[in-house]
Image (cartoon, rainbow, N blue to C red; front, side, top):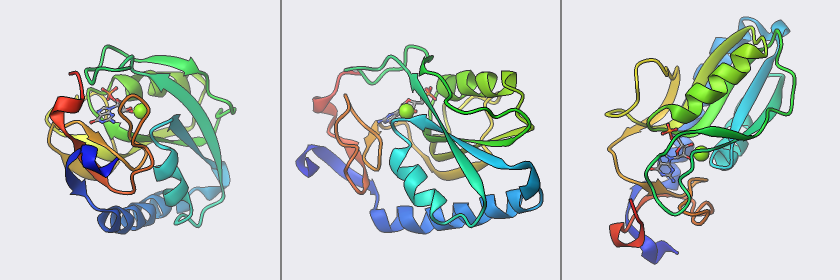
Length: 182
Ligand code: 5GP
Ligand code: MG
């Protein structure tokens, strides 16, 4: 599996350190209004590992919501638009919502989820992503909490997949370009 990587971009140690820092910033933001209640809406499947690590650093009372969005990538790496595959499984009316995604690329995924959560009557909506491709992220899809800004390479590991493989890599790496179709 590791032989399929061109290089490691972000090591597991750097990820762990940054996740702790992000958790601290998130805890400070939501501590002020803990009574309203926080729901972390996780966009599956790429955010699974990020969610598991992040919430264990967050000493807040919270609920977890799940939503599955497909960006029609399949065997190519180019985004073709986003669609909700499995709808949000919890009621977020009146609650503070933190959207959690692995990576903010063209913003199509987060735009769809934000609209869904807003329509459900959330009290506030903020966004947390582990990675952001800064060159591409559009201005109308803001992220308040960002782990790392990266170049426009196709990355895998720490939950991020190519054709559903490589999610279990503990580090984030760049896939060898000859292995994927863009
Ligand atoms: P967007 O909708 O912002 O274009 O893309 C967001 C989704 O596309 C992410 O949730 C992720 O599933 C996928 N994605 C975007 N860039 C990458 C990448 O470099 N590697 C992987 N594995 N997935 C990506
Ligand atoms: Mg994803």
